[in-house]
Length: 506
Image (cartoon, rainbow, N blue to C red; front, side, top):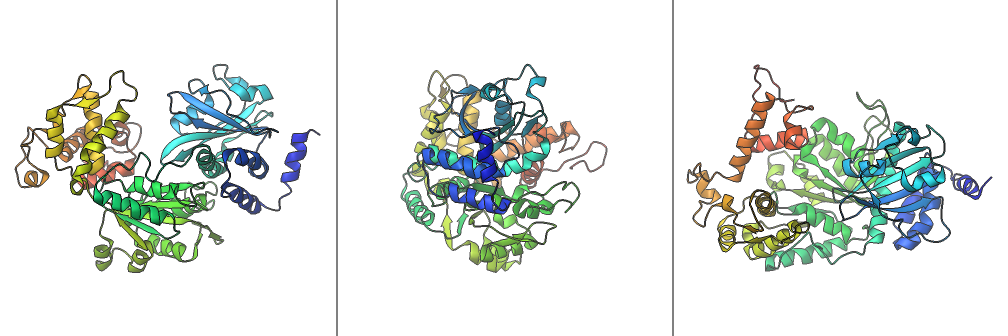
């Protein structure tokens, strides 16, 4: 019996999976630096893995097409430095990092065109790889391997996804120092914005529930990430749920999980977002869109930290901090009976209002310069704006806020020639404001961004015959989830018109 086998037998003597998860969470929340975490993690991780002949974590590098690996099992006597960077192209791990789709390979030797890199040195014959996300983006991949052909199967991927959501962000946070509050995501020097950041920093130091309010596109999600990143929970997961994007029938399952057979298609037990965020933060974006039955269960979670999976009877507890966000006035929604007043009071222990861009116009140039620097990163010449472009920026009233500003600059970087951008799509200083446009002041020559999007979606829907979902549907063409596209259509007043008279908006 080799040392690795003895090690695994020793750690698998833990009494239950629940105890093993508790040991893992204690390790992840202990505030270790990277070296200490890499020493402690293998022992508590091994009992939770379906196979463990070789286990590694791969981080997506800022440089294109690069991954950075750390080996977790077999454990090394010395704390490992990262393995040499590995190219994404031609590897299963790279494919998972690029596409975000978990993958199990029964026999790595079946496809000679796939490179399996360092794992092949350990005689690995079967692998499973799952992605994990940080701040909504794929940040890395958890990989497990076995020397036995067929040991890795698709059935184990859901469990590995849960583990990756726990350990991936913690390892990444330990590797990278925490930036100053807000980092590069929250930019501004106006008095109103600096006051908001001071309040958010105090909120981060507490365990209180936070409610972020403000118009669409002002940066509520970025502020929620910053609060988590600077809280005592920063080594644990930040799990984001965009409530408006989920069909009402699936919200409860997404939040609280489900048992096998709970509904059609529930072929196995699945952990919900509150379980995955244990000891971390759950961000409930657009909480004002939650159905009333789900609001009742959320109130219970906030009060007791307890819930049951859909189709289950076992009460589960999860230690999470909740940050919610909405563009709606929840007081008005409560007065209309659309939102529970008791839940509203639980959510707004610390209310933070994110101002629209028109109320912090002195931040406009700094924001634009920040976006231009980011867009210039992979260019031979840095992007800049003409004097006329700056005038157009100042004349526009930015109904879409910071998100609209980013979209305008990105579009100009793609469509305009040369590094100096004119932003001609915004018109000149005399362009009618959004208020004027709503009263008939806008012309066909200068349609609003909403009108541009409205026309585009109608063209796409005409092309698909009103079909939204599926490989030939409108959602696939525009690059959105079907639920997100439906929300966008509802906001813009766009209807799917089927060519055969039927209802193809499915």
